[in-house]
Length: 85
Image 1 (cartoon, helix red, strand yellow):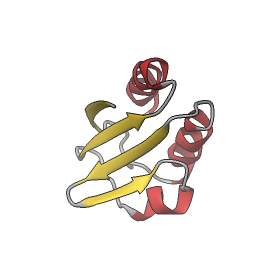
Image 2 (tube, helix red, strand yellow):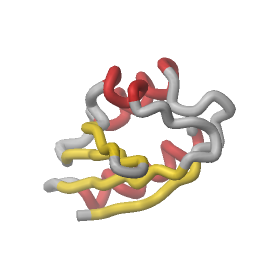
Image 3 (cartoon, one colour):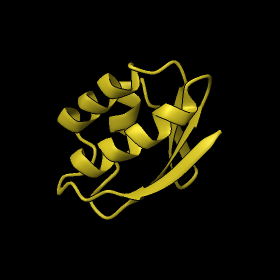
Image 4 (cartoon, one colour):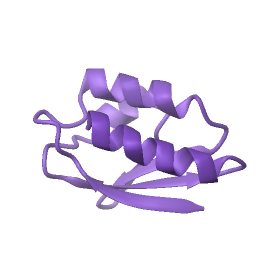
C-alpha cells in the first residue's frame, strides 16, 4: 500500500472538470485508489462520490493506492495532483 497527502491548490477544489480528469487518470491503473478527507473516503473511480466530498481549495486529502501496480501508480497520481489540483 502506498499513500500520500496533498493540499488542493485548484481555486474551486475538486469540481466536475478536475474530478473527471482524475477518474480518467485512475483508470490507467489496476490498483484501487481511495481519496479521503477527514472521516470521508471514496473510491477515486466514482465521479459523483468525488464531487460529493466537497473538497475545496486548501483542503488536505489523503490518497491511498493499493494493488499490483501501486509502485508506478502512486508517484504518477501524485504528479497528476500537483499538475492539475
